[in-house]
Image (cartoon, rainbow, N blue to C red):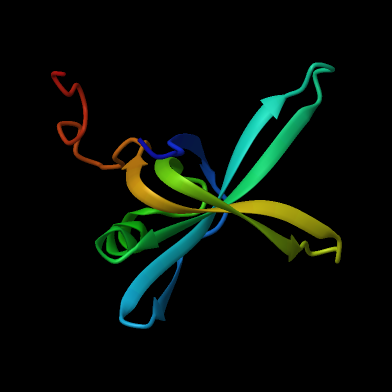
Length: 119
């Protein structure tokens, strides 16, 4: 049996998806913040760049928004570097999503839509 990585990330979206065409494929990319407190109680944030391809890109472009809570599953990570607004170099991880779960509650004026789901 070969080697593998299986990672599940849950976090808040930091930017609306940007959709691009790469060759004949569509990709929707957005950032996700994962937060934790270290041993000293200080908050740490890890930013991940999520890439959703083809049909998953269509879903991300339509439903994912800045501030959304999402869960992403991937089988591969790539390190990357970027520069923040103040010009400071930052490190990040890029992942290609195999699965995208939207965890926000459905917003609606209709009280029967999305409320008291029986499961």
